[in-house]
Image (cartoon, rainbow, N blue to C red; front, side):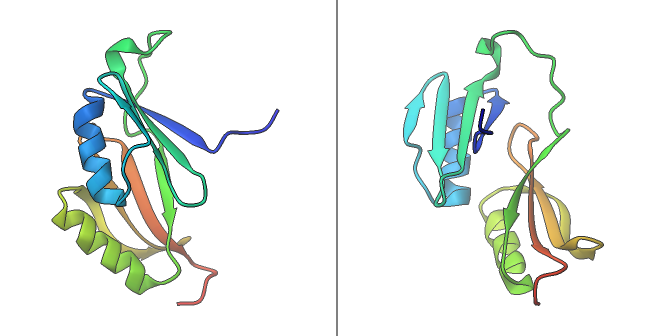
Length: 125
């Protein structure tokens, strides 16, 4: 068995969430229907958006209990992504700041899923 490079978010509206992620990530969904949308990022990472009311088996999952991490090579890029995402309507939970693991900020999508952008502390500034 091999771990998949694929995350599913349960959302209220895959079509509305797809519009949000297309703006944020700068890529179009490779698959889209009223109940599901999927994005494939450069490098192969896949993000699926599944209509929460159709998830089987039914889930009582806690939104915001996990994060998708996005790597950046520099603090300047972290700042640039922060400014870009804020301008595109992402809700910013944490402005860019240095933490033990690196320079980071945290945003959420319309359903409250957490998105963390960071530059690892052991990477050159």
